[in-house]
Image 1 (tube, rainbow, N blue to C red):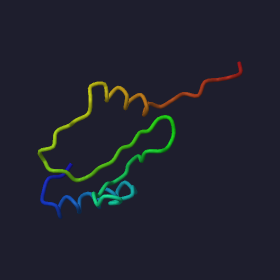
Image 2 (tube, rainbow, N blue to C red; image 1 turned 90 degrees about the vertical axis):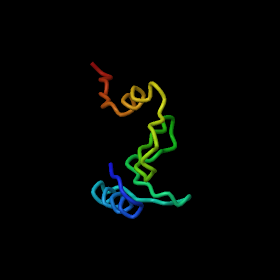
Image 3 (cartoon, one colour; image 1 turned 90 degrees about the horizontal axis):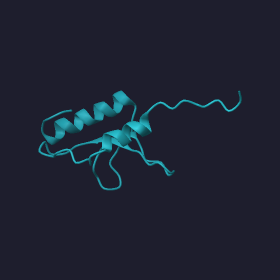
Image 4 (spheres, rainbow, N blue to C red; image 1 turned 120 degrees about the vertical axis):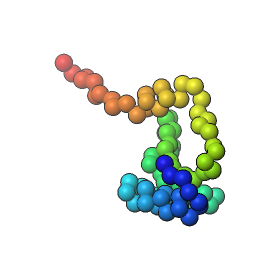
Length: 83
């Protein structure tokens, strides 16, 4: 999403946080994250965040990840219980 030195990408991350009205948190480990969807304690635990990393980091999700992500983010239709 952005390439530059640490201060440049930190500023970009802060701007994204503001634009999305999403919290920018660096606790508990000091790594800044913009939480788009934070993990909740329930059966399905989904989270999405943005952070800063070296430009050489590769994608590391497993095969089938896209299918699972789409399943949990698909719009669900309420079934009619009474006919």
